[in-house]
Length: 173
Image 1 (cartoon, rainbow, N blue to C red):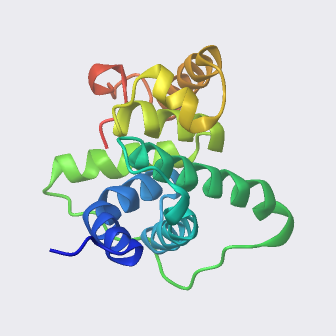
Image 2 (tube, rainbow, N blue to C red):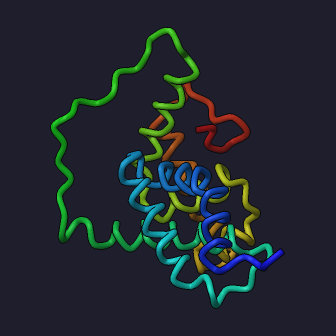
């Protein structure tokens, strides 16, 4: 049996991880189309580095880090260079599905959280990373992750109001 080529290895990795990476990207940006673009950009960057990477347990963390850094880089430039226009109205919420409605409310509130805080919240609570792993993915200190998460959760609580409780103190999106 011949060993897999770099392209075959990458294809297997990407096929198995694309959905999870896209979900992380969606929670960061709040738009499925933009999340797909972020995921494709991240996979392209990962593909270009693939032959030089050691294929141990760190690939998922590295891919998440690429998505977060790409998202944050776009957010720094977006206010100067781009305007996001749409001709579509917001998607309607099914009134009978309370859980879906709560998720939409939380995601809208999450969209109001500043980008770095949102990235910390998504990695820490959605991807269930430790504080240390989140700090590594964001390229910052553990203390910064803790303060960004605390500020982000405070913003979420403020946006959601006192009647809405976050399960476990975190985002249940």
